[in-house]
Image (cartoon, rainbow, N blue to C red; front, side, top):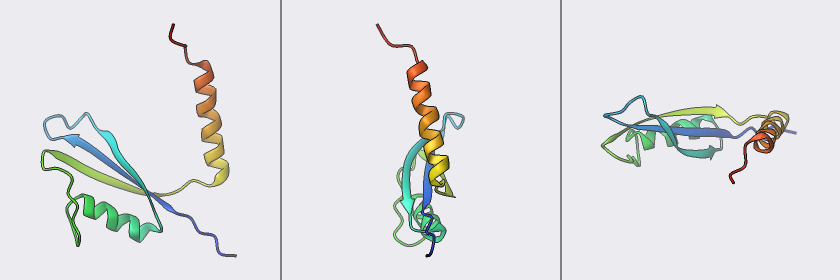
Length: 90
């Protein structure tokens, strides 16, 4: 059996006047690292089929393999624990 691990593209953007105020703009799942890098390059306005999002904003992207099931489940559990500890609005 061949193990397949999809890759996550995380696109981060910021306004050129406020580079310290960065936020995640988009998250996509790619088949592999090569596809992830190609998608990221398109968003940056590079390569074939460019899909530049805006000239007023700057972007960068990160590509990383998706976490394994145990890591993902552990993160969900930590998130659920945070929700139960968060103060409830009145």
